Image (cartoon, rainbow, N blue to C red):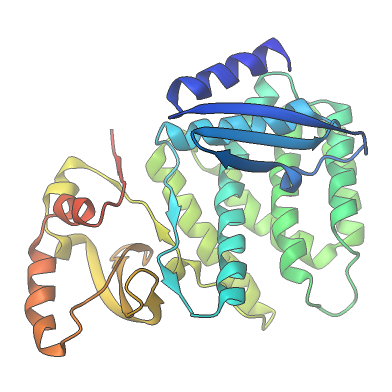
Length: 323
């Protein structure tokens, strides 16, 4: 591990409530696969394992930066308080939504790694090799792998944009030609999703949250165009809010509308109610209403009258205070 990465690890450990450790495997595949980085917990210790030595410093750095972004409360967290009572479906949705959330963090982390000098020709080649190893070539018709290709290629487009920013335009163009040749439909869709991420001001938590919501909605629009099932992450995923003091002190009714969901509250096993932002329609909290329908009018009247701060504290949900 380089001195710069060691310093980054020390920064993480200053904030993490325990100890973060890093371990690198012995494989040298020539492929950079961020999806193969694993985290495991043992008591208060977190182990980050990078199984492949290929561009391991880049993989470690990206993981540490993402951890730091979460620990420092810069990127809003996501939570999964709803279930379709179908374990396979739930796991698929959690996996997809988590990948979408990480994409926005990747835009921040890739740029930071570029600034620190960890992007070069060999990193670019290894990343492209990783995509080629991960994805099968597209067929003429949209197939069952389209969403999987699309998610991977959004990351590839983000990476390519950072390459171009770091004066590695030739490497970026080579990779783009490869993706366009092997995955034309998914690559075009991925570019449409990646461009708003790369043009956003990702130093501001409020903008980061808006970008995540835009990505959730944008993915569903593209899937619907291809007549594929949508993810509906805006309702399924609880995304921590970014609020001003005025918003926190105002009543819930000013910011949120509460809807009866077809999904189940994971904790109570009752049909859930979801608090959606009036502006962005994003799930911000999940709540279980009283079992007796006669008690619900009073319950919701009192709920809407609570301050947003009181509600979030009652539900033990974190939020980010706008500066």
